[in-house]
Structure formats: C-alpha cells, structure tokens
Amino acid sequence: MSDVFPKWTNQLPLKILIGAGLVGSAVVAGAWYYLTPKYARVGYQPLQPVAFSHAIHADQLGMDCRYCHNAVEKSWYSNIPAAGTCMNCHNQVLKDDPRLALVRESAASGKPIPWVQIHKVPDFVYFNHSVHVGRGISCVECHGPIHKMDEVRHAKELSMTFCLDCHRHPAAKIRPLDKVTQLDWKWSQDPKENERLQKLHGEKMVADWKVESLESCSACHR
Amino acid sequence: MRTFLAALALAVALVVGVLGFRGDLKRQPPLEIFPDMKRQMKLRPQATAAFFGDGRSSREFVPGTVARSTPLKVGDQLVYPFEDAPVNTGRLPGTTTNFIDAIPLPVTEEFMARGQQRFEINCLPCHGPLADGKGVTSKFGLAIVGNLHDKRIVTMPDGEIFNTITHGKNLMQGYGANVAVPDRWAVVAYLRALQRSRLGTLDEVPAEKRAGLK
Image 1: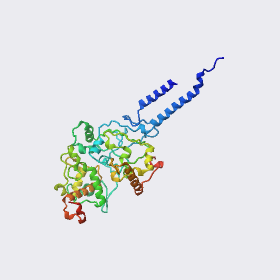
Image 2: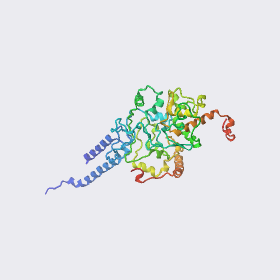
Image 3: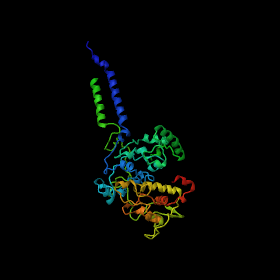
Image 4: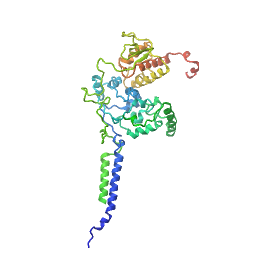
C-alpha cells in the first residue's frame, strides 16, 4: 500500500504555523511603525509659494516670533502675517528681488499668498494657542526648532498621546513667560542641572499659575 | 520554505523601500486613511473657501460696520476703538495736527514693562535695543532708520509719536494693525524712559544706585 500523503507533509502544519507567525509579525510591525502620526506627519515639508526662511528671520536676525505672529497671545490660532508686515522691511531690503515678487504683489493687491499649512490638527480638536503661550508653553514644544529651519518641517507628531503626555506632566515643559518665544532657552547648558531646575521651577510655576492638568475629553474635543 | 522566506523578505524590503522611514522628508500632505470627521465643512481661519468670491475664509469688515470690541478705560470714561478720541488717535478730537502732550493712560511699572516687551518685539529689529536706529536691519540695507534720541523726537509730543507708530512715516510702515492701542502708548512710555536714560544727569539717580554707574 502506497502512502496517501508523502512524507514531507508531516512537517507541513509546523511550517504553516511558522509562516503565519512570520507574516503576522511583519504585518503587526508594519502597522505599528507606519500607522502613526510619527510616520504620517513627521517630516512633512511642503514647498511654499515663497521660500521664507525662519532660520534667517528668527535666528540670524533675532526677531521675536510675535513680530509676525502678532495675535498668538490673544487668539486661538497663530496668525500668518499679512504681506504688509513683510513689507515693513522688504520695502527696502531685497526690494526688487524676484523671490519676493509674490509678497509685493500680495501687499499691493490684497490677494493672499497661498501658504501651505503644515501643522493641522483634526477639526474636532480645539487647540488654543493663546492659553498655551500665556502659560509658559514655548512654541518649540509642539513645533520643534522652527528657528533653525530654512523650510518649515513638521517636527513633532502632534498625536493625542503627545498632547496628553504634556497635559499629565505640564511641569516638565513649562517655562518662564518671557522665555516662551526664545526657542533656544534652557535653565542650564548642563542637561542634568537643566532637568533639576526644570523640575524645581516647573512644579512651582504649575502651582503658582494654577495650571490645570486637563485630561477630560471636553478639554480639547467638543 | 526558502522560497517563502525569500518572498517575505522581498515584501518587507518592498514596503520599506516604498514607504521609507519615520521622519523622512515628505512633500505630500499626510495621508488620512480613516477620515472620520478630521476635515469638516466648517471654515478655518486664513484658509481657502470656494463659497466666497475672493476664495478666502477670513472675511474683511463690511463697509459701514463696526467690529465688536471692548472699550478702553481712560480716566473714568469708556472709549471704544472707533471713537475719535485722543487715546485712539493721539490728537485732540476733530483736529489733524493738535497732538496731545501726555500719555492718556496711567503709566505704571507694569505698563512700562509691557512697553519694553512690545518695543523689543516690534521696534528693536530696526531701531535697535537702545532706540538709536542701529538695529540688525541696518546691515541689510535699511540705511535711514530714525535715531529716536534725536532732539526732534525727544521734543515731539507723545501723541505725535503714537501717531507715527500707528500710521508710519516716510519709509516706516504703520504698526497700527499689529500693535494694540494701549500697547502703542506703552511703547511711547518705554521710549521716553530710553530717552531719559541718555538725557539724565548723575544727580537724578538715587544715591544708592549711583555706585553701579561709572
């Protein structure tokens, strides 16, 4: 009597099991790695209609963020300045430069420059700039080192856990109000000492300013 | 089994090859696989809106209307931003040149600190931290920036300085749209302090603080 199944089939169940395990692991690993804002958003760096460099304006020239984003302390969103704000200097600096043609045209006609928005939370998230900036949360915490970027890049994931991490431990990020727009600022150049001072002063600021650790859904969603 | 492992490795390599790594430069906007209600029909500020003729979601004021506003307390009066009042224009009502001599708001230490902060945000790039016209922009082609310690400006009425901040003068553009009315007065107050720092004499410094000066 010949074999109904050849001998190699003895190993088949084991092989199928191992194979399924490998494929399953690969799919889970891929989903873990790719299906997250850490992959989807970080690194987004669209081409802008005007090659405006934050590195030149904010770092090299030392301009304050609020020279252009002048309503950020009062408004829930951080405004893009009108082209007129650019023209305060560029009516004299690089006055005929072709790279600024769109800015001049916009200032003259009122037609907006089609800047591409980079940091975009979902429409059901009600993030308020003024309340964060007004309670010692620096621009750098969510936007990364903007003052070093020639082209703005989405540097942090801005996922829900990103928000919650800070909402649970605001003392780890909070800083004095006059240092909010100084993105390079640290308590100390020594990382250990910086951490110690951050903890020391952070907890005091959280207590003094009555900073709430809001974790309820309606803090951000409504 | 070997073929299977090779195929799996190839598939992984293909996925990594196409999707890349976290943080790679991406020119295309993030893909939202499950849109849920992430992008809604409502208008976001400074966005595009096909509904309006000019395509903008942020609207300009309809001519003849007045924005909702909070009045400013001047003395015991409440002044709205649309009123022709000295605090809003820097001049006596109904005139074009009669600038007021003094800041119409109470000058407190807090007011002065605010003035310094607003000065350093808005004025410092061109006029410099000391208001002597030597800001960072002088290296980039802004050649004729006013030195605010000039006699002409020291003797100028407060209202006229306020008016210049609001509407600009010569090559300087107006900052009325960027700096609120009380902040503009605070900047005037801080500028006066800067001017005083150069005009004062040693006798005016309190005795206990003189040692710190040379």
